[in-house]
Image (tube, rainbow, N blue to C red; front, side, top):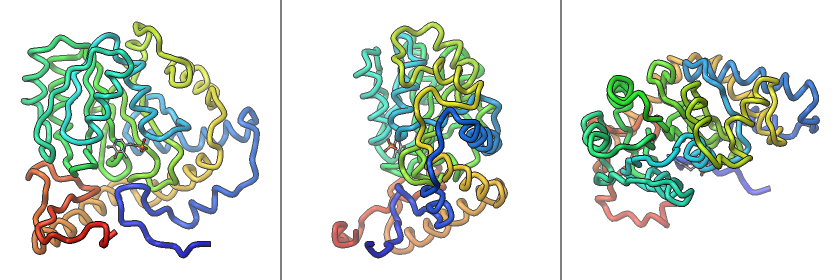
Amino acid sequence: MAAHRKLFIPGPTEVAPEVLAELSRPMIGHRFPECSELIASIVPKVQKMLYTENMISLATCSGTGLMEAAVRNCVRDSCVCFINGAFSKRFYQIAKSNGKQAIPVEIPWGHGFNADLVDEALSQNKVDAVTLVHNETSTAAMIDIDSIAGLMKEKYPDISLLVDMVSSMGGVKLEIDKLGVDVALASGQKALALPPGVAVAAISPKAMEKAGTVENRGFYFDFFNVQKSYAKNQTHITPTIPHLYAMKKQMEIIIEEGLENRWRRHLEMAERVRAWAEEHFRIFTQEGYRSNTLTCVENTRNVNISDLN
Ligand SMILES: *Cc1c(COP(=O)(O)O)cnc(C)c1O
């Protein structure tokens, strides 16, 4: 076996040995009670981590799959896609390629969105959903989700709020119910520190209501298929059972650490890395929008990046 090289990349991130070990358990049937028990042991911990009572989808795909799911279920005709980096641009491409009328609103990469920018775009465009990336991994910009969610609640309650939290969920405090995010989605292999292959979404009752008005939701990602199985602690397709075992373990570790401790630890690590980066380089990301889970350093010393890698 190749030597273990510790990863210092945004994702996949390092997986704890005891979590990795869970992947090698003997298989069970996905309609066996054991599998329902497994799912039932994970869901409340995810809800706790996200401060939500929303339905939790444990999806067998990467995060991009759930970005597509959000669009297929919650964009009836049109959406504004807020772009400030590679992944928010991908959200736009997903909306467009699924036949939705997608309106891009782009700001310089490295900058973050706030309520004023969102309000400006929505006052000029009549749409039924918005897509946003909470933590734009390509530039380490974290948007001001509190102010944006507040605006949406107050002024645009009928517009579905679809938020990619791929690289912040599990590392940053995100109170989904309080924010009123309709679809909050993440990959397993970023701040949740799982092997790639499983993704998570919290889907609000409002999102379900909306999905009921949307045609051609497909099958694999249809929220109603997810919901029917969810009621039985199952998934409508064969899930990645090894990842579910790993996730059960990882959620236990997260809850045991204590959520507030976990958020604080990530903030402290971010502050330390940012201080180092300011001293030796420069931080790429706009001040006030710097991520707590990753740091984007401007290559002011012309370091050969492939050599570094
Ligand atoms: C990694 C990432 C994605 C893509 O996730 P996959 O799991 O590779 O599909 C989407 N959005 C953000 C913000 C990411 O960091």
